[in-house]
Length: 160
Image 1 (cartoon, rainbow, N blue to C red):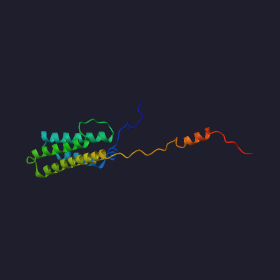
Image 2 (tube, rainbow, N blue to C red):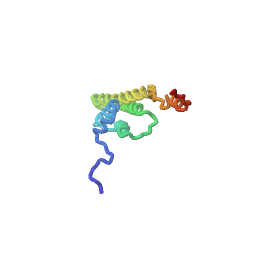
Image 3 (cartoon, rainbow, N blue to C red):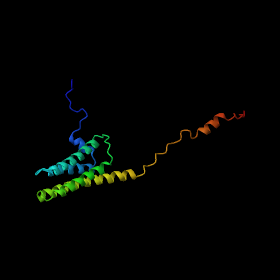
Image 4 (cartoon, rainbow, N blue to C red):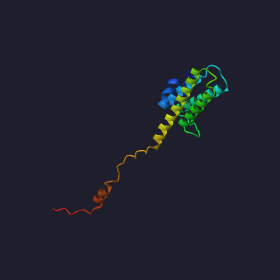
């Protein structure tokens, strides 16, 4: 019988938000705005834009849950690529929809690409840094030789 709690490993949106870094949050906001910017005349091009934005959100959700998602690219590269492809798709339909909506959608795709590029740069510079050397541990046998010598040395005659 269920205990009534709905936790079951689920995270609230606030927990997802807290688990992401600033670059990933930027890409997530851009992806949500990109979905919103497709409101209006909806064609196959807008469908692809929405699918790319949803793919970005799925990647971010997987990273927030620490899920090992295997991609052939780094997360930042995949997110930046999705933003770039969305930008090209928006440019294809730029003159078929109102100018303001097209510019808004282009700005949203730029935000997604920017977040992906920043995430990629941040992770690549963190990977390039040399890890600090491990702290030096004291040798537990240091001084042991002196104790052995004292213990095995012949007894000195005592003067009476």
